[in-house]
Image 1 (cartoon, helix red, strand yellow):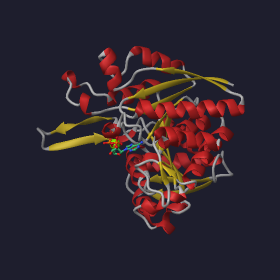
Image 2 (cartoon, protein in one colour):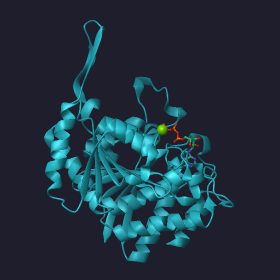
Image 3 (tube, helix red, strand yellow):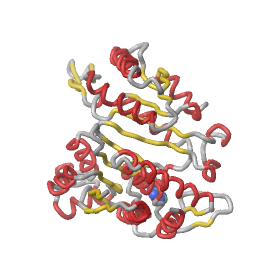
Image 4 (cartoon, helix red, strand yellow):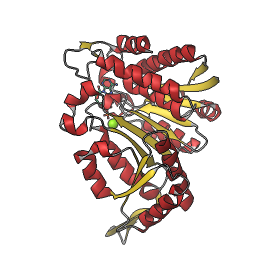
Length: 354
Ligand code: ATP
Ligand code: MG
């Protein structure tokens, strides 16, 4: 298959780790007989420097034509106090909005050689493999009115959802559960919120179309606790915007390796934007020591969710796992009796394992 992939390296270590992802993708392409065509475009601080805006039209147009988009990271001190309140992060929020990417996917997987760095006991977190799916475009963050009222003596935020917005994210969650261990936990606050009661209705209705997937409803407070006490009990978690924001950050620290985590923002037709969870890490940019694995695992997610290349995605994930088991790690990770390497050697090790 010939696929058009847009690369948005962005700022800081974004450029270095993007090279790693490209190398790994080209390796997979030649192993499996695909052709990936890459086009790089500017976003974030890099785009501010070149074009005076964090999201140039040229970048938007390219992304609208793409099969999938890979993003490095945006942001850095250099662009913190610009006139007109322009910020690199507006590039990322802007492109998500332009493309209508409503589902945020965050897989959290424990890699055995890294688990000793988890804040939880190794035996609690060992074997955890969770996919959190968060609704990204509705709910409390976007509802109107959102303002101070009564001369500043009161305040209102609005939690608004269309039923159709719930249906599309819940459907995505069932589809994803089907590709995994076929268990879906829907998180809400149905004992208090009307929006959560409709959410539950939608989940129960949709579940009829997926009899092979088991469904469990969980209140968000209990879910937050369960993530810490029994993370291995989860497979796919689906939830609305605010709960998802909180739970995905909570879950991201479970395995003790933030630099390893990929994420995806996608829509129903499969177009998606894939990026590591970590930021642009300006403190280590240009030093050749950045951990490329979060970016490489984001490329694997892209193969799975936008390009229907499940086997190829698994190949990359297995290669990453193998590298860590062989003891390779970058400076941000610690592996007992491991070999500390830089970005290039780490990438080479992944490629060797494919
Ligand atoms: P942002 O606001 O962009 O999310 P942040 O303040 O959360 O930024 P990061 O850029 O994620 O920060 O970096 C936090 C710390 O983690 C920094 O010390 C950085 O060097 C380190 N770090 C982040 N990503 C990586 C990586 N891929 N490899 C090595 N170290 C990393
Ligand atoms: Mg951050």
